[in-house]
Length: 108
Image (tube, rainbow, N blue to C red):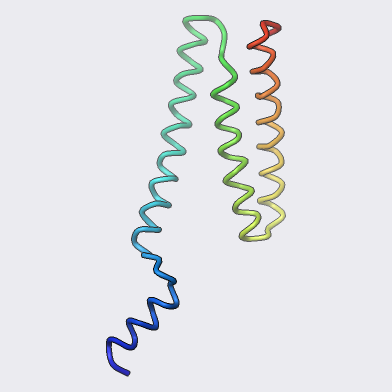
């Protein structure tokens, strides 16, 4: 088999996906999640100090992001552990959504 034939077979097998690009996207998304996590924590601390209250909207977003990540992992890996963690994050997201709505209504 010549090089061109091997290259053609590899391209068909990968369906046009560039492994280096996919790895860079994965690393970027992973880093972005932690940057967002720390940004919301800082946001909560500053709002708590200045306004003596924390806006629950940012926390809702964090829990939704984690919920989404673990649901995707569960769908791909079919591990019960991933589903349990996803449900916990989903419940947290639901709770923060309720708190945020109550906060917007002036109840909390």
